[in-house]
Amino acid sequence: MLRNTTRSALIDAAFWTGYCAFNLSMSAAFGRITSGAWVIAVGLAVELWIAGRVMRAIAQRRHWFELGPLRLAARLFACVVIGSGLAQLALVPPLWVAAKWNWVYLGPDNTAGFAWPMLLMYWAQTAVILALWAALWSWTVAMRRYREGEIARLNAESLRHASELDALRARLNPHFVFNALNNLRALINEDTERARELVTRLSSTLRHALDHSQRESVSVAEELSVVDDYLAVESVHYEDRLRVVRDVDPAALDLRLPPMALQLLVENAIKHGIARTPGGGELSLRVRADGARLRIEVANPGRIEAESVRRGVGLAYLRTRLAHASPPGAFELRQHGARVTAHMEISQ
Picture 1: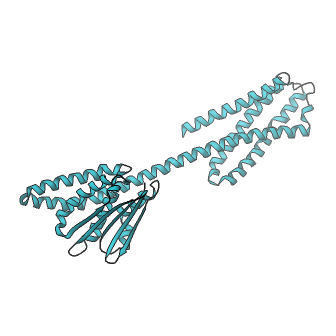
Picture 2: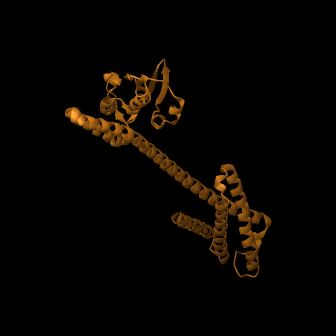
Picture 3: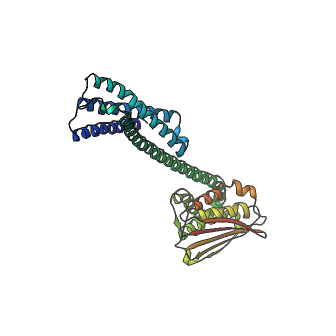
């Protein structure tokens, strides 16, 4: 804030100093720089600088930039008209008296320039220069507010994405790890080889949940590797209740999708389908390359529950990622008889 104020003050000083120098140079071009020319150049520069400071203070105190462009322009125009008039009113009478008493020299006829047509022209010239300053200042403020708004929006979006990722990790870790550790405990004495494999798969799954999700996109092959590790851990918990059928098009392996997107669909299918169905069921995974689009379907037994869809963190995160992708993707849950199918399409 202090740096912006200092910079604005320096820009103001440079602008009005330049205006003073311009007036003096015009006087020199048409003859010589008289004492009256000095008074006019310096006096107008100081008065318009004060008018600009007052205008800026009023605009900031009354929050004019919150009113919209038309209302802002109308108020600035009124300030320009009034400010330039007051500047001339503060300069012309004292200058006229000083010229009449020969305290300053304006030219051969010291008072010839004070006729009403000339005064009107002086006021118009003053209004134009003050309007130019107002336009430059308002444009600078508008651009700064736009940049600050963009930065605030990007920071808010970044924080939102970070909180969503944290929520996903928190959602994955407690229940999933709790079940996996219980299963590992049971396997240590019964089947050490399988217990060793479970530790490897669990470690890989957690590593992907923490690191893999930081990337903008991953290949289908990489995402399937995450899903394989996840399903291997879950198969220990559900055993014969979880039956997986995969149909993956080799042409789709190099296509890209948001990280953890497919894993989220599989996890959702197990949590809301397999786990809630007596005797478990079949989880089918179908991945296809369709021209410039990647099509994914994950199906499971069960029914769509509106409350789960509305409050589900994972699906909400997935929809957000797909909506903000370039180009955007699409996601939809469909009920087909006694099965629920998640459809996801991602343009490449």
